[in-house]
Image (tube, rainbow, N blue to C red; front, side, top):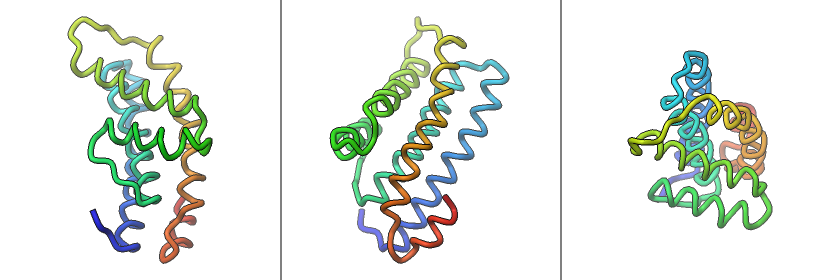
Length: 146
């Protein structure tokens, strides 16, 4: 997909906004003790943020597993994002898959609560990587919104 800098910047901003909105939604779901829905929304919180990171660096990924692969290849393996956060993102993907598609797997608060605590850490590691690579044409506006 070929985007202008302006389009790329708008898409990055949109995905970051979706990440924050989805995280707020997730907190409500957790408070209601809806563990499968929480697993799904925690994954999408980080998916939106991770896709914003990839887009800001002009890295294409055409699937959810592609996002995981590109995150590992371009950020974790180069030491830009911690191994722990790379594993965390992969774990969220697996948990979402399990919660959505595996009939005999149970998710409960012991699965969800420890991972929900790591969401804030994920934001703290990923947002600076996006800020550092803000597109020049919209750099000031993007950084103000982060």
